[in-house]
Length: 283
Image 1 (cartoon, one colour):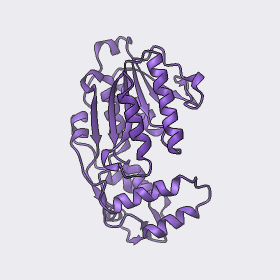
Image 2 (cartoon, one colour):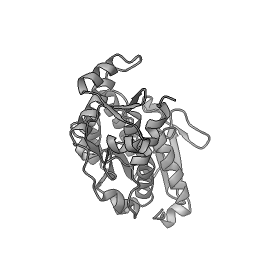
Image 3 (tube, one colour):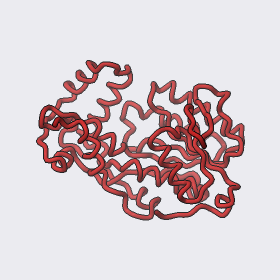
């Protein structure tokens, strides 16, 4: 791990708040910030012992007083209008309460064609026009997600991704990158970081798991999603767009920004993706 917080952070003068603290990315960001010596607190609609109660859907709960740097972890699991309204409400509260710098976890630039990209780009525009200092972290799709989107048919690993590759980083590398940026925001003012990892393909995952691959067409994949109980209306197009993007190598480019921020090469997402796919494997 590289990087340290400023002297003000170490004396507790500067406070960093991370939204969505009950989530897997945000909780890791808070952990890394505290390991760096930062005065970091989480914010959540279901707050833990050391968190602030923050509910994006209830503006009255958005108290950001005393916060110097806000790490806005995208609340992106909903329709675009809901997500953009949530982010707009938080940014208005941040400006009102005197937050000096906002770090936003966005979507990798190559993902503009994904079904959920609009909310990220709209939030980036809001942030650029907010009058506050900002940094945008354009995160690649998590390696954990790539593995979780695969399924099993007896001994076969079932995939809609074809022969495409994806430059998917691990969630922990992205969390550490966010912590390092938030701990030293002056070094990242008005910067957009494209955070991706070394690319890999489903065949690589299959080799890790010593399993043959059974391919799904995008039509078969979408139909299966539509028949899945409990699937929300926005989810089938979102997940199909991920599958199509990987299949056609739209998310395969690896940038150097993550290595620059981390001060080392990012971990390969391949073992993490394989580990994420393995638990549902039939005995």
